[in-house]
Picture 1: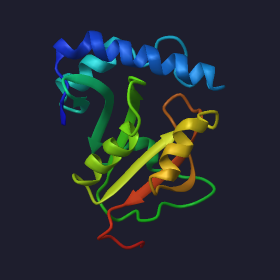
Picture 2: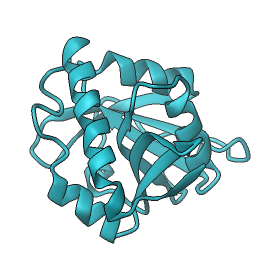
Picture 3: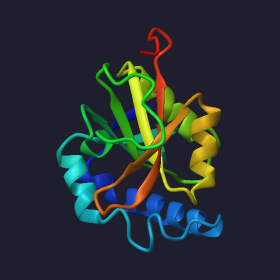
Picture 4: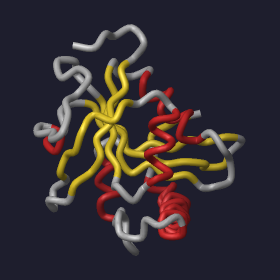
Length: 167
């Protein structure tokens, strides 16, 4: 089941992100999240803004992610490609992490997010082969390169709900 995260979830959420950072570093992606991303202050802001969600199965937190509806300023400019559809309102998945205790977390998260928007976007670091694979396996199209707030590039992806057409 999916639900909004609450502050009482923070100890488990922080553990999940610590696990994700270790897994990212072990798979050749040590810099995307470094040693302390996402910081607790950002997670608290996400919780207070009702945009941080948890995936819970049999009482266990298996995944955590930010799901944000509406335009993302970092997605206004895309280089080396184009969005599949730039007219539809969209949602964005950010900071997706799994506890590592179960397979299929990313697929379940993506499916849930697509129930809440017609167009879903995500981005990831060039070194994050795992996330690139998960997005592509789940039907996302690599659309181009965007730059996050600190100016570093990310591979941008989009997936449209089955009822939508490319524009």
